[in-house]
Length: 196
Image 1 (tube, rainbow, N blue to C red):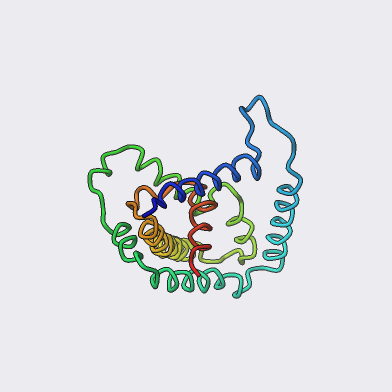
Image 2 (cartoon, helix red, strand yellow; image 1 turned 120 degrees about the vertical axis):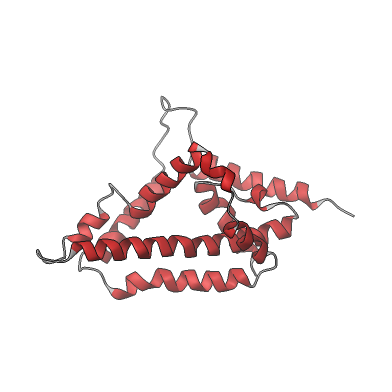
């Protein structure tokens, strides 16, 4: 009988080390900025070119609906994995005691700023295609409802896969769910790689 938990943790630490040291080349502090990572700079330039190409001619319906198609595909795949139900139950089960914690509200506010892209300028750029007397209030309400629904749906997609990861590793979901960029760039790609 072997203990595979140790092996899993080594793989996890290897992924974390690779991301923080080789990919991002995180320096020791703000006074040591480090060299420019040209591969990341070129990827950033490519991302800006793709964004420009997408919004230069206005909003196309395929670019607006494609993320939802992919999200539903990931949701269906995630729900078919063993342990996905536990992840979804963890997502839907509220923790009332956390409502008194100030950090919960700070995290919620931060999520709102990221979700609505406040201060980034994308909404302003896309809004410039509207006519002068356009009903912006109606669009704002629709945008808020769609954004909230999208975030809720994304939670199902993510926690179904996290439930699968917890089931595979034999740990609790709290131990698998890393918050922040680590969830998006380490945990979720690792989980998708395991889904074969």
